Length: 366
Image 1 (cartoon, helix red, strand yellow):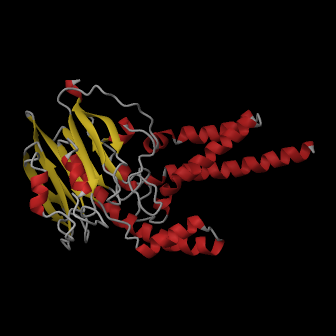
Image 2 (cartoon, rainbow, N blue to C red):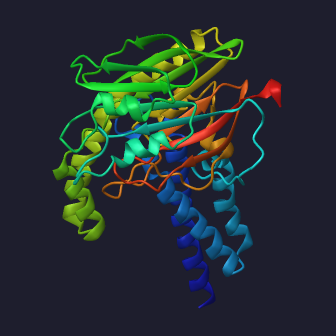
Image 3 (cartoon, rainbow, N blue to C red):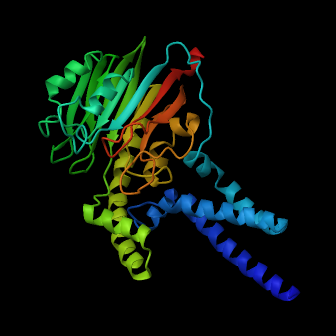
């Protein structure tokens, strides 16, 4: 029995080693170029799964007092500590915001929402009007899709407190629009050119006191998952039969890999625009359509700070449909700025995204 116990422990330790290896592979997958390794670049989506498994092994070893074995899981967690902080930060909120700070809100509004009925005020438009944000960046902006959706005139009346705004079509099809409503004067606006049929990026220069702020509003390539794909995904979670999981995974991974390969050059273009900019103060926000453990997020944020990582709390899941539990909406700030109380606001489900907002202040004013 004593020898059998050792064999069992060695077997469990081998499984632990395998899981820890997969954890590190997912954590560092953002360093793979998706155009060269489209499938492998997507494994970062599984980071939380292997993270939880690794924590489970750590607790198991501690419970049975195998402390040397516990070092394996502990080493795995320490080696991916930066990714863990990015994915699941824990910060307390502050009620004392610096004087001169501004509130930035980013929201994929899905054309002001779906399945609207009746004649009540549009929930998304009401939310924006009551947000008290200084800058509002919107993706998938569309008006009067049905009689229940607001017209452009109704939007402008509701958001009259934001006297400066830009609404621009993006992508080669010109069918998708992104918008910026601001209390700060918009001095200039231009698109960032990269290949996409229906997604895009806008660069704005805003007057902020005596200086100029560069604001970059993004809607990166979507994963193009159809309703049928999402049904397959939910079926896999509900009834994980081997054949169903294998066929479903092949279909989903293929689409995710294709989208990741398209997003990579888009992310590179945004990173290059940030690197070339002469602006000290930069805010990048929008729908990245990728998780915090991804090539797109790593490349775009390499010279910036993730506002949620710096001042948020929890997973910050910003997509709210079909059990795709990921934070794909972001606010990033340049090193000259400090973010406070970054929040994914889960009070509103009219769109398939939750809004994300934070307060931003210049560090020199602190």
